[in-house]
Length: 145
Image 1 (spheres, rainbow, N blue to C red):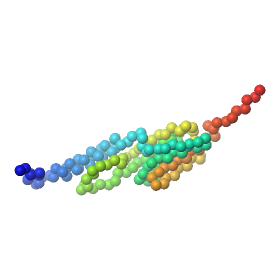
Image 2 (tube, rainbow, N blue to C red):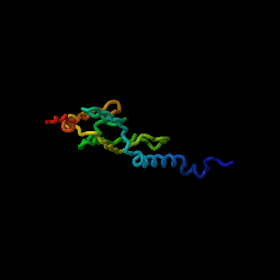
Image 3 (cartoon, one colour):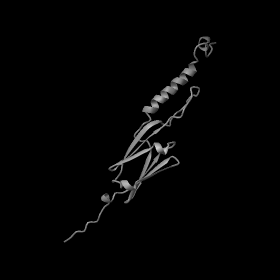
């Protein structure tokens, strides 16, 4: 009967340790390239005649590391999520939470009043309230005869 690990491996390198190390390296490689999709962070966009609210899921983020910009009618949410430190003795069996830089541009139905935009972060949820610019609000025009 053949042993699972022959004596030649026991004196050199444990193949399972090497496989775990290789898996960690591959996970890091794919985390920086494949998990960055245009759909992150997931958002809900709600609005009415006077304002738009963008609610984004960004769990585990430091709110100081989120960058929000508004240019015309486009809101951009940018940030970076740091990877959890893992020592060489720990095997990663599944890693679905993405790490690294992300950016999401969201086209709004109208321009916002930049002076009145507010953002808050609570329990992993970012809520950005964008009041509608007066210049873009519909106005009734009187027809003279």
